[in-house]
Each structure stands twice: as structure tokens, then as C-alpha cells.
Image (cartoon, rainbow, N blue to C red; front, side, top):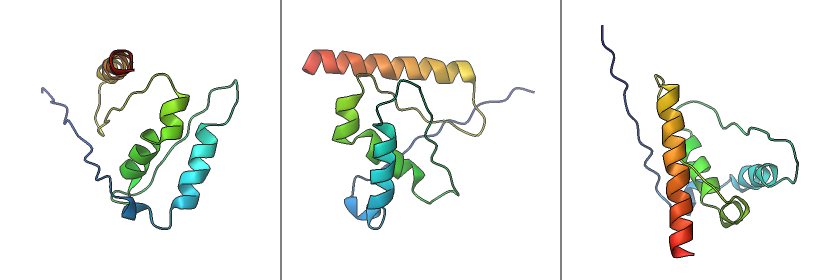
Length: 106
């Protein structure tokens, strides 16, 4: 049986009204992401569907503090069924595009 992997996308509306009441959460996550430590860490955002996890992640990803603190960035979507090699390829492609854009337009 051949299985095809379902592709997903993440549409995010850039309206600030979504974050009413979540400013403390955003501030806490920004502090965690920008903490000056030599060890690497993982920050997870999890919960039921429709809570705004992708919107929160996109808001953090596009934050000027994050953009100015990390030289390389990558945004990928992961489905319930995924291929690890495809994910790694997408991360590399996204990272390379980010570097090219910064080099070209900086």
C-alpha cells in the first residue's frame, strides 16, 4: 500500500488583536528564547487544535528581537505523518533562502 503524505500550510493573520491577554506569555517566551546561555534548549508550544499555537509561534518568529538575535531562520510545517528527511531538507532550504535574502537585501 502506497501512502502519500498530507502537506499542510500555516495561514497566519498578522492582526494584533489575537494576542489580547497573551502579552505575558509572549514576553515569557521571548525571554526564554533570548536567554544568553551556551547550552541549547527547546521551547515547545503545544495544546489542542485551534488555540493559536501557530499564530503565537509566527508572532515570536517575526518579532524584531528574534530576527535581530538569530542569524539563520527556518519555518516549516509538520503534519501528523511526516518524513524526517523531507523535514530536514525543508529546514535547509528555508535556512538557505533566509541567508540569501539577508545577504541580497542587507
